[in-house]
Image 1 (spheres, rainbow, N blue to C red):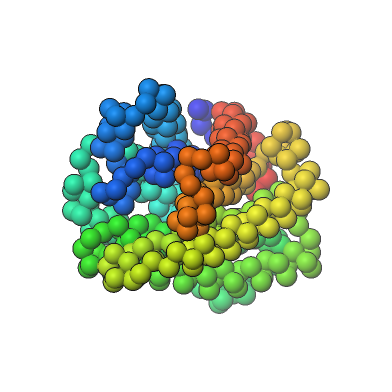
Image 2: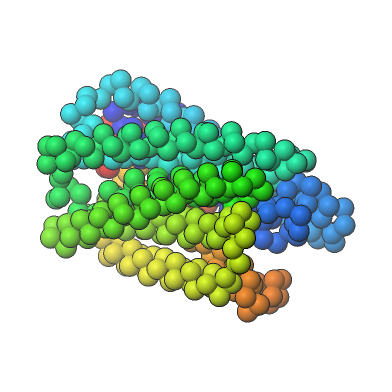
Length: 398
């Protein structure tokens, strides 16, 4: 991978690492929901080893395929993360504060805590699926995970706090230049932090760890919901007044990963309250919750697709010669839809005995998810070849 000239770099390139991290999780979900793990809340390497030893011969190639896909995406995520951190460090030394803040584009810096939080999810998924016996020490790892997440959360709050304070003091928000939903990036980051906190909150058997995880998950989810409402109104109002440019049209899909992260956080909160506070799991409510979230994702997905197709975004920026780091925002919505599709099937349908796993109906429901996963992977690889393996132009479209 050749080094990108610094004048062509932009923090939105962190979305490349984010997309690879999300695809890592998509491979893990096959194991999570299809491999029995009655003794642990998540599938572990021990469960996979047991399935390898006792399962049918045709199961073993599928295990190899899943592990290979997960490891390949994890390596790509870490490689792109390191590349971005090095490029960003050089870029920040060369760009002035005025250039960074012009047009309120410094909100893109929120991709940094967003991607770093995804790294924790990637390490968790890879570790759980490949390291035998890891779950036996999970309770000792959870405090460390919470500590790292608190640091990341404070980093994200400080970064966004400086940005928001500048706008409030100077009144310098560019309504014309931000006639899109790109300003939802901080909400994306806070929702990612919330779902990460909800993981130990849902899985730990220690009530203190459980409560700490759930509290911070609620804190960041509440923050994401409040800011998301404000930014959505501002963004939609600006789009109605000034129109949406082709280069910014993928921002319409940012609501899909935000909805997925918020929905998973709520599901984990319910599970955490069940483990730590003896709440009875309301299975019908899970059907309603997952159905509402999935319905909204489908609606925003169709809206974004129609708008981007009409503006020629796919033709110019995905298949054509136009280059934009913002094109990487096409990957996360597909990953998010795939992930929450699994949650809808397993918690909404299977959990309420509407669908039985591994039946023809179950596999029919999986088909669109597999197609979306494959398309997301194909898009990531295509953009990597187009944007990262060749020197970026001096002025990339942001």
